[in-house]
Structure formats: C-alpha cells, structure tokens
Image (cartoon, rainbow, N blue to C red; front, side, top):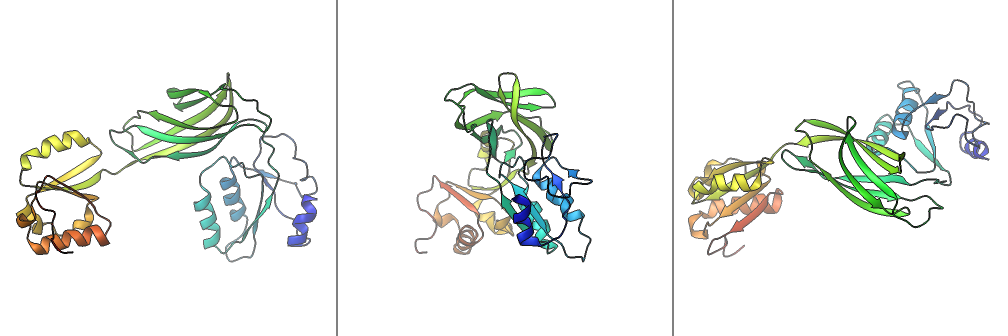
Length: 285
C-alpha cells in the first residue's frame, strides 16, 4: 500500500531509499521499494541532506519523506530551507505513530550567557500503552560526566525543567538521556553556543554606581556608562540591548536626546529601564 501510494504521486520511477532506523530489517511497507544499496542516516535532517546530495545541481528531482513524525533532531528549518533554495520539492507521506516507549519529543533551550546556568524545558511523551507512574528520570551529561538529573518523571507525559552549570566554553555539546532504570529509552544531543554579552547603556548622574550595577548583573552583560549631558556623544543608541536611566530627571536631558531615546525604544527595539527620577522624559509625546 505504501509503495502504491508513492507511485500514485510519482509514477513508475524507482526511488533511492535512505533509512533512518535502528532496525536490522526493512520495516513493513518498504519491501516493494528498490532497496539495493540502501543508505542509512542517523536523523531525518541528515537523510534529507543525503537525498539532496543525490540530485545533481541543475537537475530535476524531489524528496519524499515517509515518517511517523517522531523526529529526534532539531534542524528541520535549516534542512527544508536548503531544499527550497535549490528548488527541490519536499513531499511527506505520514505513517501512523507506533510509540512503544517514552520519548523526548522536544527541547526548548534558553539562550545561554557567560556566568549563567544552562536551562531547558523538555517535553516527554509516554508510550501508547504506558501505565501511570513516576519511574523515568532525565539525565544531562557532557562527555560522560553527569551535570544534572531529574527523578520521578511521569511515564505517560511530562514537561520537565532541567538546569546545570556549564564550562565556560564557546560551544558546549551535551547529551540528554531519558532513562527507565538502567536503560536509555530516548536521547538527544544538544549543541549550545555561548551568546555574546548583552550590551547596556547606563545613563546616570551617579557614575560611581556603575561597579555595583555590574556586580549585580554579572558577566553576561557589558555596560557603557555616560552622564545625561554626554548622551549626545553616543552616536548609535540602537547598538545597545537596553538603556538604563538612573535618577535622570527630564530637565537634565535635552529635548533632542529625549527624542533620540524615544525613537530607539519605539522604532529600533531598544529596551528602556527608567528609575529614580522625579519626571519621566517628555511631558508630551
């Protein structure tokens, strides 16, 4: 049936087959495909990249993805964009999902800055026939060394938060494993890049407060300090993630500088924290 469905869309062509599976035998429904010299890939994204490589430049061809939707990688957008850029159509034939064990369905990783902890929200889907219980655990490792774990995860479905301190590397490769007893039932590899420090502009009549602010914020920020009268020397406010106005009354800031600041906030996406002053910038906006 699967082969007939494919032929209805593509005619009598004989497709190349790239398998993403740990099974030693061909899954049911694939035996009618031409599996001579079948290739293998670790993830669906890798398989689609291999498929694109089989199509010569400036030649026609297309890629068909036959999947139950249980992907184990996070690179779909990049891979699909690569196919689209080459003008290679991507078709999808959906298979019914047969989930026999719990899986890590998705990982949402927070941006990571120097001096901050790694943090991720992990969506775990249980097996179709799983009984209610709290027998799973989630383990975060780096090069075999355990960084963090979460115990007592529900067998059926759970959203789990996991945190850990990371080495101060520009790039960290992490292994996230879902375990049932001593068995790894699902795992993902995460590659995490250290984000550049957020750039802040500190405007204050008390520049001696800068050291205290820097200590409070930590090493994930770089801070430029100016007095209100020197704000005009800052050529481009849009280079900063946010501006902190500390105890600056409106009469201390010339009207053109107030307008520059409002333009940066309203039109250029610059954040603004305004604290301690008697009057907030323009009386009329």
